[in-house]
Length: 413
Image 1 (cartoon, helix red, strand yellow):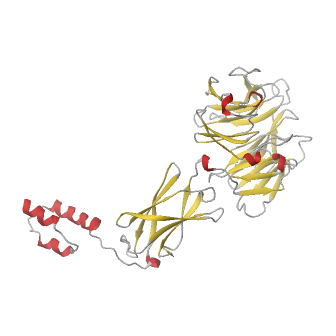
Image 2 (cartoon, helix red, strand yellow):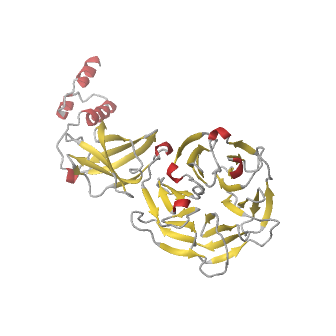
Image 3 (tube, one colour):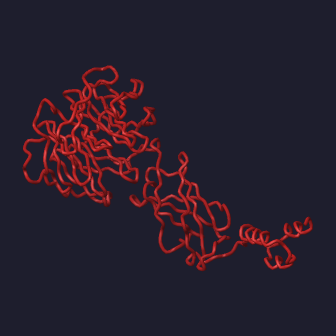
């Protein structure tokens, strides 16, 4: 048996030498030999790139580095172990920016490239494998590349001439934006082109002298808080008015932030009354939570509210310069200290375990446990007597839209 093992270890690149092994050799061992030959004895070869196909095996993010693993196959469907220079090119679908990465062979026909994405090469991207600068395959492959929050800094695009933009909500390829004219709809299909205002709410004139504040897309409807009239209005996504909460100043005085709980209850920040109101799905009043004060658990002008996937809700306590987190039953879990540096926190957007919040300094990012991560968008900070950014939204590609309210523009990071 030792002599037999020696013969096996001495196998050369010539597959025919396997025939010299005695027929009495265990069949299982023959299978293992074939596998070894496929893995280690597959020769490098020159391949016509136009006849190759590329398959993305995985996309994995660790820290700031995204690793893209691909496999190459020839026209017969067999794996390619290429002698030529192989590179991977990443192209951002939204902005067209490209980033090339050196490919490392992991095993025959399997290659891997480590790329550090930047603010313009992230989100939905196309992966193009090249051999000697010739693209492989008939079409690129789409992948999602994430970008860590601390890498956000300089804007990637600015949308100008939006009069006093405020709250932003994204639904598919449309963005609802509160403006001085009302609630308008912007087309995000191609943000490199001038955006089209395809609608202004309300369309039927049923609401007069209103002031839209915050918005919430819920199912096929849009909810809008109206602090001037002390109501929350419900619209269809095409702008058609549906209904409003009842006029009752005892229950709702200055509605601002809106959020829907996992159970379908609507939570509304009543800023002047320093509390949170809860409404049923049909917009009938249910209950009130919170009271005025500066001690933890109380509010001074609560401005915005958001739920995470676990049912915890977060409130920007505007005049107390903090964020407070409560469990689903209203128990205070944590609040940011003054060392967090928040100044009049305004609107929030939660993505997985990260909280993006606007304040007088721009945008701050915290974990859902209250730990500070980073700050960016200082160009949207308040200046002189002007207010701070009054809206934030994040699309499915991870691009952050910030309403630079005093400068009449929306900045994308």
